[in-house]
Every structure is written in C-alpha cells, then in structure tokens.
Amino acid sequence: MNFRYGIMRFMSGRYGADALFYVLFVISAILAFINIFLRSVILQIIVYIVIFVALLRVFSRNFTARQKENSVVLSVINKIRSVIGLRRQRRADYTHIYKKCPYCKAVLRLPRKKGRHTTVCPRCNKSFSVRVLRER
Image (cartoon, rainbow, N blue to C red; front, side, top):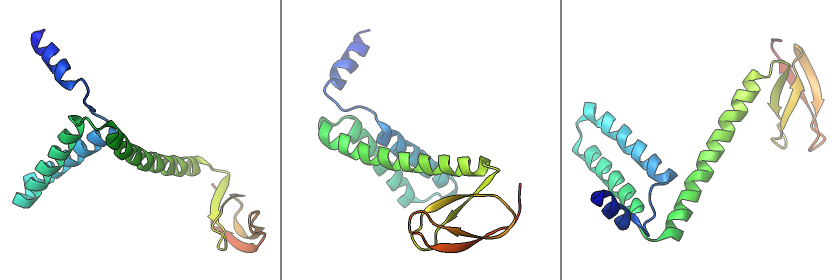
C-alpha cells in the first residue's frame, strides 16, 4: 500500500500515457522484434531512443506541448481510420461503384450497370465516360 501511494505521489502533476505513447511503444516493440533476426546495433539503439522518448513524454510536466503532439497523432490516426472505413463501406456496396471525376477529382457514387456509360459530374458539370466491367 505504501509503495502504491509513493507511485501515485510521484506521478501527480505528470502527463502520463496517451495515444502517442502507445504508438511509440508499438513501434519500439516491432523494431525490437525485427532486430531479433537482424541483430543490428544501430537498430537496437533506435529502439532504446524510441522507448526513452516515450518514457520522457510519460513523466513530462509540460501538458500543453504533450497535448499538441498527441493531437497531431490522433488526427493522423483518425484519417487512417476514416480511409479504412470508407474502403470497407465501398467494398460492401454491391449496387454502386465509386469513380473519381478526372477533372475535379470528386468521388462519384454511380449505379453498377455493366458497360460503358457517360456521366456528368455534379461539382464541375463536365461529362466523362465510365466503364463498368461487371455487375455483382
């Protein structure tokens, strides 16, 4: 009980673990696993540096700087999740195809009908040809 109280007192006022800490920890674990096979001193030093940076962030008292760093990482993670979610959603859509307009790069959701079709982009009002190879 006394040890736990000491740890709690030590960590009060410190930033603690966040998403960037977990990302750095996973990166260091992956690099350490790769280094099992490569046995590179340089890679081992990189693993130690990544772990050291992660621990410095955990024990830091500069909340604003750590929150800014974490918000950047969270925005990147959210972008990756949204792209993955869109791909899953598009793969599950059996009645439509998704094509980019060659002029304005807008993504259009078009009905899946086999053959060559001409469509008009609602954003730039230019027409272009779309080829659908198969119906599902």
